[in-house]
Length: 81
Image 1: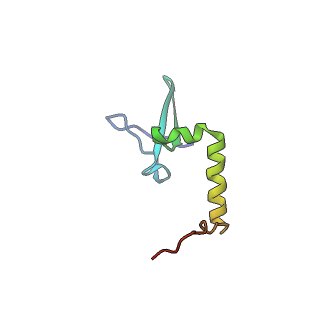
Image 2 (image 1 turned 30 degrees about the vertical axis):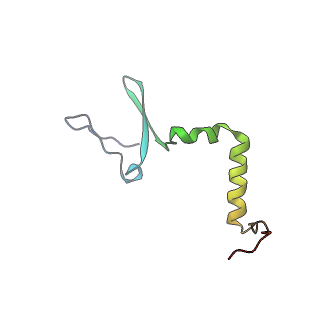
Image 3 (image 1 turned 90 degrees about the vertical axis):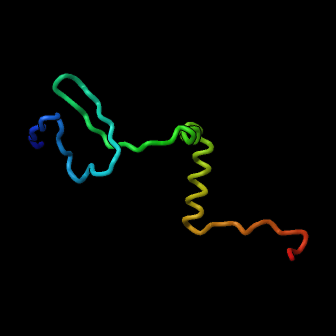
């Protein structure tokens, strides 16, 4: 625990650990504030985290790619020129 004095505008510094990071600031009561590191997911991507089957499939595919378990594309019926 450390003690800091807020400047004339009510600001304090959180230190390098929080530099360039997104945080959630939660005002608990008149004497307590909670600062939590956070990551933001764009709204158009939230569907993936709400769909367990799709998320599991993506994670499985990423793990397969990471370990080199990739498939060769389908065989072609005609030759490419």
